[in-house]
View 1 (cartoon, helix red, strand yellow):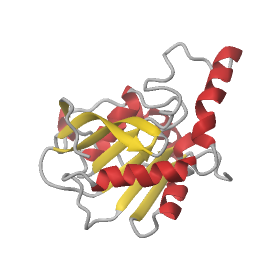
View 2: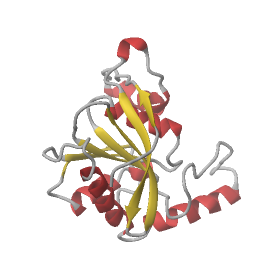
View 3: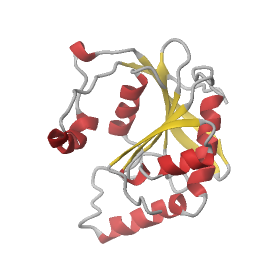
View 4: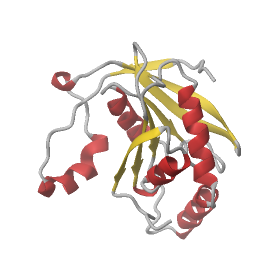
Length: 203
């Protein structure tokens, strides 16, 4: 369905070419690196949207260049959830010429942000319990596949998505294995996937 939310405009920062040796350090710092004037790409529109799902309504971010229609990208976030640094990463991808959906994967439990800055999984048992409760419905058998179909249907309903081009999917850590499930659920629609330090790859 079309979106109606207020937009924000942003620019993109390109990433440098890296050696294998530098990749680990790069991966840790990539999502927090600020844009610089010399690196700017296409300006993008950044919108908060609600996506109708089989299991409820998912709050999400839809980001696309200001003009034209572009290949769609579905982005699966990591365990800390949909937050400013993930939103910024969606902007970076969009500014390369893509229309990007970044959903709150934990929508069944809570709207984003799900975890605040004080969250400490390693040292706080209450936080570990909260995390287990939050991700349980997302990890349930078949949930990600149902979600993937709904997310891509949303992308395909937007005029900013070029439906003649294949969808790409992009996952971080917890979201990494779900690129595989997305491609399996929609093999004729998904043309590319990238997992960054994906966890739970045996799921």
